[in-house]
Image (cartoon, rainbow, N blue to C red; front, side, top):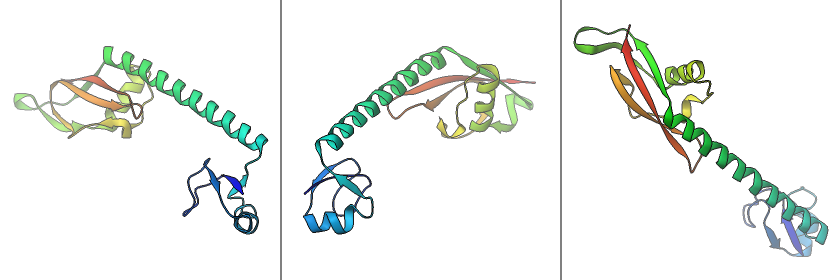
Length: 148
């Protein structure tokens, strides 16, 4: 019997896969536990439509991320921090502070976990910070650190 899996099943396959199982296994385990449904023509068509919709949504998210990346590349964020002698900072600028400044200055609500920094910024000047917007899209934001 052919079955469309509704969840990942350890020894059979992943969600939305069509697998061939014995009739007894399907009737006694997969169907009662709602792990899968029978692969009828209606269910196959529903699966095909669902996959097409998911592909369309994924393409829209990718396009939106690319558009946001193009905007971020053109913009810069100015961070004010107390400076000591020789341009050294008291404290540092973290990804959380950059995310807050982006929301305040540019209007982009970016999660601090998407901002990729090797270390915190500890010196005045212009710095470039990578922002991971999508698995395939990242942008480079210019952060200018100035003294108060």
